[in-house]
Length: 181
Image 1 (cartoon, one colour):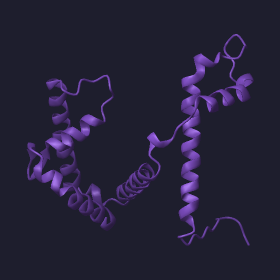
Image 2 (cartoon, rainbow, N blue to C red; image 1 turned 90 degrees about the horizontal axis):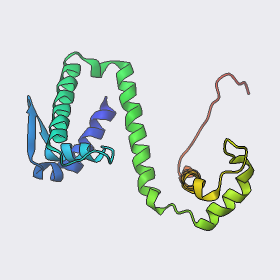
Image 3 (cartoon, rainbow, N blue to C red; image 1 turned 180 degrees about the vertical axis):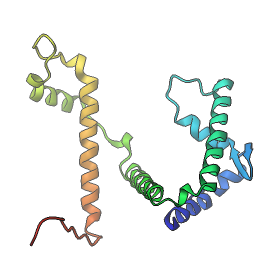
Image 4 (cartoon, rainbow, N blue to C red; image 1 turned 90 degrees about the vertical axis):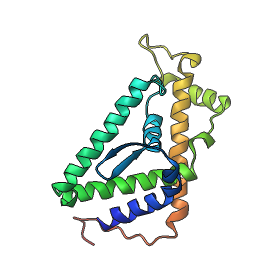
């Protein structure tokens, strides 16, 4: 719980200038829901949604209010003190921090795949990329899929390289349970 409170305090302090300027759009007891909260939620919507549609905005504000009510009730019932819930919170914080660091160090828009790389990959794996007719799928039909795959491979490689580059700054001990030495 101390880790969570520390993380939340850091986030709150870091976000304070933004939050201070953000208009309050709803309030649940003493908790304010701001325009920034709504904007952050709007950013998570898939592209097919009109983010300026008043009906969608109203639904999202309702969602934020309902979520805050549920959070407050959970706290009243002491659910935030449950060891299993604390573990889930700690795990979520770890995942969020790790992902944020990787996004900062390895921005997705910096990973590029050239047409030459795509064509070479296609030629190398053409016999594995067969359609229902048993023939290789034409390059133009599979190009976007191959590009996504190669970008994913490059991202994974960049992540491994980054981890290996910083690993030397940490003392790591791995003790395998069940194996005797």
